[in-house]
Image (cartoon, rainbow, N blue to C red):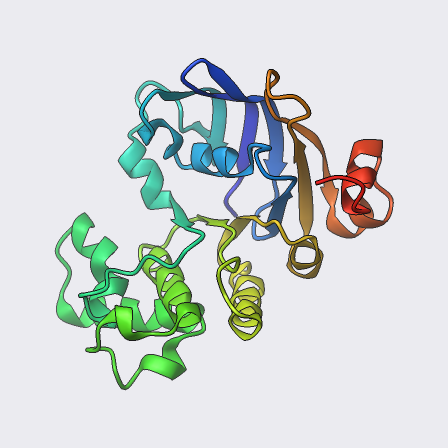
Length: 257
């Protein structure tokens, strides 16, 4: 099972320290939800986990993130290789609109090497099955991905991320732009996927976190002149019913945020 741990992570945007000294352990083959008000560093933390944060001009990160014991921020670590092991699905569906459904799913594989066509088809089918989309698109794989509905496009993006067999899948509010039916399909997909991949999901929807996650982390940035911090993290049911920190209780009961 894949282990993922974060030790003393801090992140900056220029001179603004947005994230301060975050440490957490992510349970293998589980769903970990990250909650908190807007601007509390949730998405920054997620992007640090697969080294996308540093792609923003002026942004940097310090600290360590260990994937199966190897520090992905070590000097000899290749960010591109990190992203082969830690995939990401963004807030809004971003399929390649002119590519076919099939081409979308295997696009990451083609970037990583040459595969026989039969292998590509097998990997595409498996990824679409895991993303809960195969039954809806198996007879129209040659249609452009941009012709799918919003919910289908998001599951297509999940399939694209899964096709390269990542150990960890990061999801940044993947259902926030979707209708309730599509949201339910995404949630069902997340629950089914955790037997094969470790999932970390940022969500603004506390009910969603309660429904689908095994553990929940609450983050907060109390003042703009201070970095965001991890307030507490633990079993989802326990955190929502008996949080240890009064700030967590105030947030989940709607007193701020």
